Image 1 (cartoon, rainbow, N blue to C red):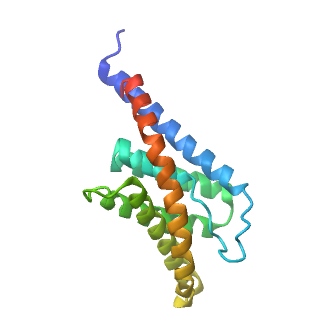
Image 2 (cartoon, one colour):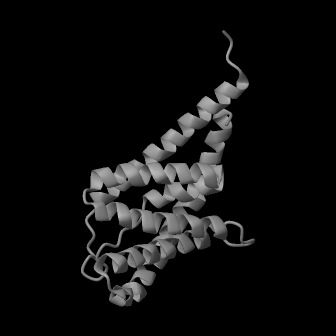
Amino acid sequence: MKKTNSNNSNTRKLILLGLMTSYSLALYLIETQIPNPLLFWFPGAKLGLSNIITLLCLLSFGERDTFKILTVRIIISSIFAGPASTFLFSVAGGYLSFIGMAIAIRIKGLSTIGISIVGAILHNIGQLIMASFIIESISIMGYLPLMLGASLATGVFIGIVVKFSEPLLKKQILKIGY
C-alpha cells in the first residue's frame, strides 16, 4: 500500500511538533536545575528558556500549533514541577505571554527581541495576577516594577537566542519537507 503525500506531510508535522514540545520540556527541566543567584531580589524569576521554543514556534508554525505545544508543555511540566500552584502560574503566564506575542508578531517593524520582551513582560504580569488571586490581595502587584526589570533582561536574552535560532530551524523545516 502506497502512502500519500498528505499522510507523509501529516506525519512529518506531528514528529516536528512532538520534537518542539520535547525541546520545550527539556529546556524547562534544565532551567529548574540552574541556581538563581538573584533570588533575593527577584524571587521566582527565571530566564524562561522554554519560551525560546514558544516564540520560535509562533514565528515558524503559527498560532494553532504553538498553542498545542504550549498546552502540552504546561501540563507535563506542571506534573514534573509539583504543586498545583505551578500549573496555575504556568497557565496565567504562559497563555498571556502567548496571546501578547501572537499580537506583537503582527506589528510591522517589531523585532524578534521586541516580541520576546512583550512576551516576558506579559508572562510576569500573568503570574502576578494569578498570585494576587491566590493570596487574595493586590498588594503583590507592588512587585511589578522589579519583575518588569527582570522581564526586560530575560526578554532581550530570549529574543537574541530566537533571532539566531530561527533561520536554522527554518532551514531544517525545509530539509524535512514540512
